[in-house]
Image (cartoon, rainbow, N blue to C red; front, top):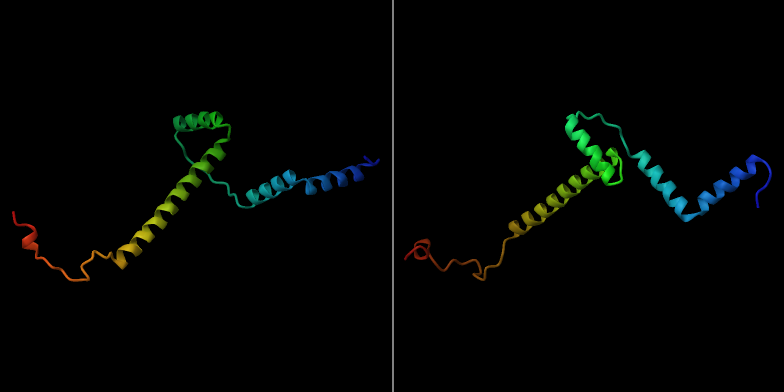
Length: 114
């Protein structure tokens, strides 16, 4: 039912947008993305820029989207590396049970005898 007058149509459209799950999800995504972005200026060699633009078109995205995804992947990789590094440092500090109960039953010279 479409009421006469532009005010009613706008209200009905607004209600549809906020009740439609897909529209609601996209609205929240756009608002969240818009709030957390910041413009930057880059100096990129022209030949790399040209190739990056072509790559972005091939991936059906913008140059900004391509750079954002590449940086996000780089940051995620670095964070995963740092977490793994910290886990391994904790393991090294705690030590490993080699079954010797802390007693060395051999001498270095004995190990290197031929």
